Length: 218
Image 1 (cartoon, helix red, strand yellow):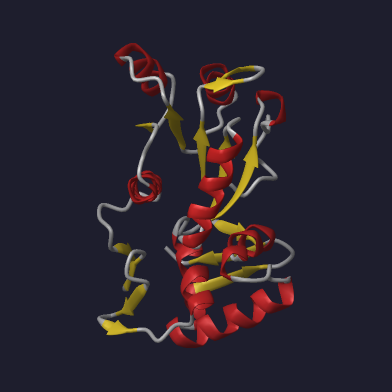
Image 2 (image 1 turned 30 degrees about the vertical axis):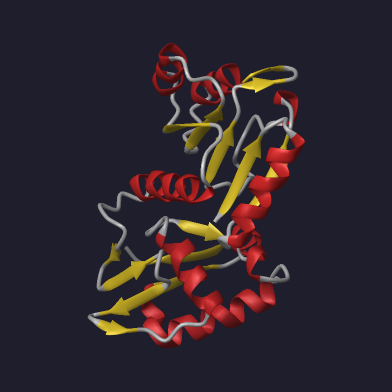
């Protein structure tokens, strides 16, 4: 999982990155509206944590710009503003969730998982893709009721592919999302892990799109 943080507070931004890394979530941290991407075509972000009060603009304006452009990336607003009108403006403006500072890391991570679960159209914490059952919180997976013996990298690769079953996930995105587990993976290492994963869940379940990436059969 790869998160974009847009937050101008130095202490909080650093703390968020460290807390997410402890949960095997990679992140990029920006501090200004002008630094935010205008297009997400080349970005591998699964979710955005967006502060409302930024030095050169507001999170409301940035969110509105993204939604006008048809960018549907999940957005969770993180802010100290507690007024009802701010929460309503954020949610009505296209945010997927709203969390007030200060917040517990466990709650933030839980909200991220909930938002991504909805985007992946999964009804519960147990993700279902055909006969595959994946439990992100317990790091376990089963196939037709049989527990799979997966390495941490194999499990995370399977989870990343399961976020978008039937869609191609670029190799670059997979490499970026694996970074919290240690050193960033090169494409050769990804191919080795995918090969091992295919051996365990069936080669037909993971399709290679040459020059692009991989797709988990829906």
